[in-house]
Structure formats: C-alpha cells, structure tokens
Length: 259
Image: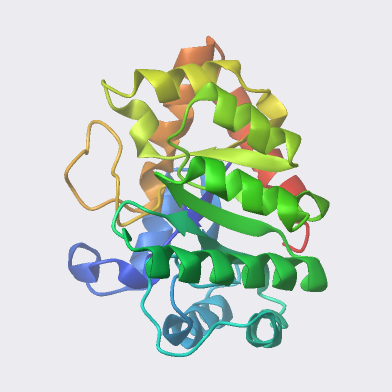
C-alpha cells in the first residue's frame, strides 16, 4: 500500500471524476493508495480541508500558510496552534521560504517571520513541519537550526535540491519527499539524491494537482499517480516496487506520528 504524503485535494479539477471527490479516492484505492495528507497553503482554505477530513477518514490535513501566500494579517503561532487542535490535523505547514517569486527584502523578511511562527507552533503542538523551499535552501536550513526545528522534525516536501542539502536536512531530523519531478528525464541531480539518501528517510508525494509524473507530465496530477514516483525510486535504487511502497508507507507513519 502507498501513502500520498502531500496533495492539495481541494485544488483538483473534479471534471474528470464526475465532480465527485469520492471517485478521486476510489481511483487512488485501485492503485493501492491508502492514505492522503491534504496540505493547507492558506488559512482561508482550512475549513474546506476540515470538511474533507470529516467526510473521508483516510484524509489527514495540515494547517499553514505557503510562503508565497499573500495575507493582510500576520500569522502567529497562537493562530496556528488553535487550528491545529483538530485531531485530523497532523502537521504544521506547508511553510518555509520561496525566493523565486519574492524578490524584495521586505517580502523575504515577512516569509522568514512567518516561517519562525510555524516552527514555534509545531514545537508547541508537537506536530511535525511540512517545509517548502525554493531558491532559498541555505536560509531555510539556517532558520530551521536557529529555531530548533530538529526537535520536532518533519518533511522537506517536493524536494528539488542537491545531495548536500538533503543530507543537512536529514541531520536536522527531516525526511525527504520526492514528487513527480524525480521521474523527469532532466532531473539527474534529484535522481542522485533518491539513489543516495537513507531509505528510512524517503517519502513520496504527488503535490497534486501539480507536477504529474512521467508519462502523465503536463496533465492534472492526482493521488493515484503517486505509484509512478514509487516505481521511479525503486528503479533508481535497483529495488522492488513493493519494497519501496512498504518503506515509504512506514516512513510516513513514523514521521506523522499523530496519524
């Protein structure tokens, strides 16, 4: 069985599924996906995620604000802790730093402030972090260390950095999650990471509806396709698909202890 450790089910276009979320999950079940972590990127989305968790017991959720989300009000650890009290919420995030679209000092300062608040909430609630980083790896790792993120750990989601960054994140008690990017022909640096890091630190995800794996690249992604990520990692490591499926599922439940 498989777990999709990071998806955005609330963003899916359900047209291909007869406008029925149940069909999305049924398709996933046909492909051996047993559990889903639906990740929050904006607090305004959180009530929708809570409803999904009520309707479908095999959906867990997180609470957090994506670094590129624009919000007028400041995000505080107290706000996050209040929302994270829901038992279906097993993680804080996604949070982190993304300098790809945020180029101003003011914007990057805001991201760093928000990131600190998320880490403090995770430590307070004893729930792991889901971290997004893009063109900000050094600052991300530095801030994680400054705020003692290693005490709670979590996952570097949709990892797209090199082996050095992966190893340093693992030293901070974080898992490395691979998305459909690892199936892309030109993702040779990332594929080397998938070959080299310890098996006990690997997770898989879709990040759906984004980043569909080969051979579905360019189409809408959905949780059933996470099996292609597992197969790619198995191929890279010369292992059986079934073994990677079991290992990544066990890793998910070890990382997200409240699930």
